[in-house]
Structures are given as structure tokens and as C-alpha cells.
Image (cartoon, rainbow, N blue to C red; front, side, top):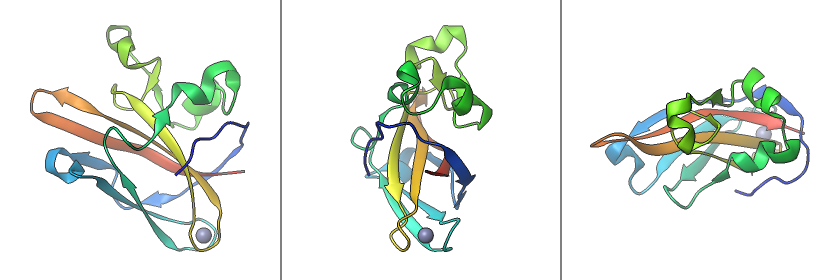
Length: 136
Ligand SMILES: [Zn+2]
């Protein structure tokens, strides 16, 4: 897993076996499986709360990696309602939102994963994968 600092163009969305994790399913990590669009290999990535990922803000700051429009149109994120803006301008499920880059271990195609993690309400912690997209 790595951060992305150059402009990218989004490709196809990979299929992910499970997008929503809650409470115990996230301890010690959420195990996410996605199928490579190019070679069909099933890849496994582990998301560890407070360790995995980089703020999604870094992607659209000065349109460095992707513009806000690209993020919204491709549904990587949504606009956050004003009363929850402290979680960030663009979020998944109105919770703190992160991303990371990864690649298919079989054919080395590159992917970006966007997810959010946080306490939705007392006693309910959620991790939501908005999706995993191929990029160039
Ligand atoms: Zn592949």
C-alpha cells in the first residue's frame, strides 16, 4: 500500500466481495478482497484502523491526483453535509475518509481504494469501502 502523488486517470472499478464492515469485523483489521479487472486474480488487502491509508484530501488538493469532479462523478466520495464538514469536504458515509494505492499481485495493474472509518453512533464503528478502481 502506498500514497499517490501524481495525476492519475481512473479506469474500471474492480469487484469487491464485501464493502461494509462493523465493530468486531474491523479488529484487528478488515480483510478486503477484490478481483483484478485485467487478469481475474483475487487480491486480498488488509485495512488496519488508524494505520492504513492517507487522507483523501491529498488527492484533490490543488487537483494534484484527481479533481473533486472526478472523485464525485465516479462516486469515490460524496459531498459532506455542512453539519458534518469537520470530517472533510468529500467523504464516504460522512465519516473520515482515506485512500491508498495497491497493485494486483499477479499482473501488477494499479488500483486505488477509497474507504472511511469511524464511529457512526455510540457503539457502532463502521468501515465502508466506496470502491477499488483501476488507474493509469
Ligand atoms: Zn491482475
